[in-house]
Image (cartoon, rainbow, N blue to C red; front, side, top):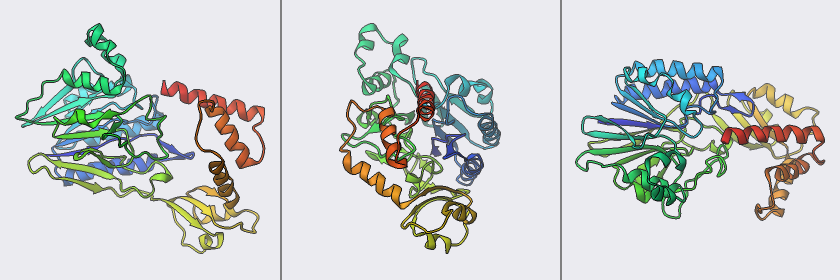
Length: 375
């Protein structure tokens, strides 16, 4: 049996105020195309379907279109909730979708939901936190859970795997291999993957394949069959060099391969002088340009935007020097630092002045929204 693994669709994501909905529609169509061409019998999507727990109307419409196309595939679709997803919103209509071979698991009910096909058992574990286990463990067992690793150990010990079958686990977690943590990008952080201490991969050895979601960069954890598929497209300029795609796993041969997906618009970082940039061919790519000189023109950004309409970030030379000065002076973040003080320091270095009252109030309102969303 050939199964396909993807995750972290983040439908509705915005990059520097640029909507990525058209790019996402294209990449979702690419996923459908590859599933057909590879004749995948099962498509696994390991969480973070939406980018926000309360998605925009446009994001919901795009997901709806995706569900319609998924229903036309000649394969089973398995989908779990990620930390960005609302359990209630993702679960809406799931009993109807079951009839269309689309199986969505958004809640934990004391055991990992299992879907079986042929000689393969798929264990579908949505994003959970320790309190989700409270009603299913004794007081002593629950009191023994001190971290995510303890929680995952308790969850897995409740499952009886049939060693004579192929066992595949889908989950949305922060997983490490010994002391080695997965590599993050700028579109995620320890804070955003957060409130989640690592789960050690040694707990997963009983599974033949572990389809991980949560981390944006495709990467292998401990062995070739325990891996993050990564996002199907790039979501920050720090990911510009990533090779984004989907993973296929052959349950008979054990072969694992990555199939690259072609984006609608490439994402590129460029370090060039103003003159070099102006002499380049026009491009619709999503660009971040770090200028290597101080152009003697009145509106370098306006001129460059005419050539590169999707230029999302232009970093003048002086700002790069100021940023390097910030990092040179800082040796780390102390317990006394807060997001407010760190942003105020960064703003002053960038703009040469402190935040005024309105700017400080606006920043605090944004920070409060983010904290509410994380909660």
